[in-house]
Image (cartoon, rainbow over the protein chains, first blue to last red):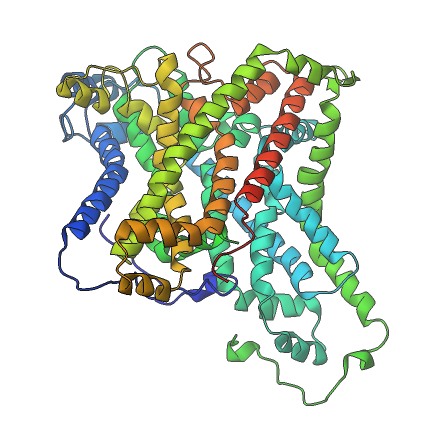
Length: 322
Length: 313
């Protein structure tokens, strides 16, 4: 990774309320000469960065290796017998003989199917959750109705409940509705809202000036018109941030799809990759193939970081300090 | 807040007071609110509120999903108190949380101070955050490979150093510290960025004054940075600790509770009880206890660290 393109140079809108006075630079004291302390600090930071990045290199290195040769050269820093064979196996474009010759099983992973499933699930969850949460946030932030604050508080208390607590009854519900092993079942609990998404959007909507809406109301615009023509366009920045966060979360989710979406036609990538490993508990799995698969599963995430780097970083700093 | 010109309706000059809009406007606003809230309320009711109540009820029943649940009062809780596997799960989880949160918080505090002192580079912050964005399952697989007893790079290095190979994930002693380490790797950057945001909120003048007074780096850190950071640290600790208690993915991929129950953490135990043994009532009871533990930890931590009071004001 060489650079993180920055979409907008000053993206203050991701923070839904004024960020805590951001000092423009780290405090600089005295001269900028290379004092020993400063050198030491850079060495420490470099070590952390190295430790962070090394596993990524190791995965790529293994993915580009020949599984059969890995045993003889386990410590080699560079790919062993450099080949794209593992990636071919994962993507299903290698012939069975080639695959077996390089230590693969010859069985296909159905990578494209699981990739499609992950994309479908993450996209549906993101679209539904962001839109419906924005609507709910509008009701909480911009409209006055009896019991509003009590209901909002109730929504927030759901943040305190550990996900596994609701997972058991949710599984039962999905089963009773006959939605096991369907996309609807995998998506359902996150499709309509999460307390965090509502909270996130509400914080932003609270900050919009009332005059904007008043003017439209006086002109006779309905609430839905105001929402779709005024509120949503103004909120495009936080909506985008929320969408990225939601997509990541949905892409990375493991436990829920494991429980309700085992069958191949709805199995997502995380579940599929974990299963590959579990099917070879004792013997040595096709490590190069598995690592090639993890590279491909992590790729969309890395791309999101490359494209939306600053937005992601800012949003994470905000979410912690709500 | 500027609007794109096309969407701005011409500003009406008529000075219409709110009260003059007719008697029904408040009611209409209520109706509109209900319409806006409907989808989210459906999701909240069906997948948050109702299951919460249902789980509380299920914890008082014996249920295998095939026959209807039978109410058995607090039997599940009595059974839980006498279940060595539950206490084992609680102990293992506690050990994991202490190791994970301990190492992660100290390292993250150090990393946040380094970032704050040295650089504003978004690239460096992006690298630091990268592990947090990768799926848990992928992270677990990566380390499963790197820590493999025979082929893993870690053991190659250890052997080269003359330490000898370590069965990281297959020994009872090493498994939990190893999993704690894996997740420290994953969450370090995220935690550091949270603390970093807190550091940015400390006014520069405070540091400048300290510099004029000739305070050493360490003295500034212990006497100024840490005290002023306390509310942020408290929040970060609560957030990360709650997350840490919910360890599941890494265990499910690497050790599956073994060896010999050494990594059967609470989430994994609940998962097995519910979805392998169809002991739904009992699993719900464990979840209920877990929820109270988390609530208690949150409450105690926020109290102890007086998180709502800032020393800055």
